[in-house]
Length: 65
Image (cartoon, rainbow, N blue to C red; front, top):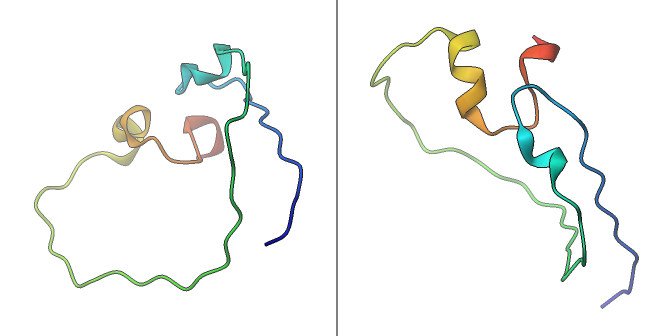
């Protein structure tokens, strides 16, 4: 096991209010390299992608579309 330092830096975004939180203490972190795959799925509904962005909770927001 290797030891390393970690940091958290939240950036402002109109779609994600988490940047307003103060990081008081980092409890832990991990770094991994892996290969992932998705199982075959199906469409259950279609939505306007820009309208869905505020609810997606991914690492991109409307400013990057």
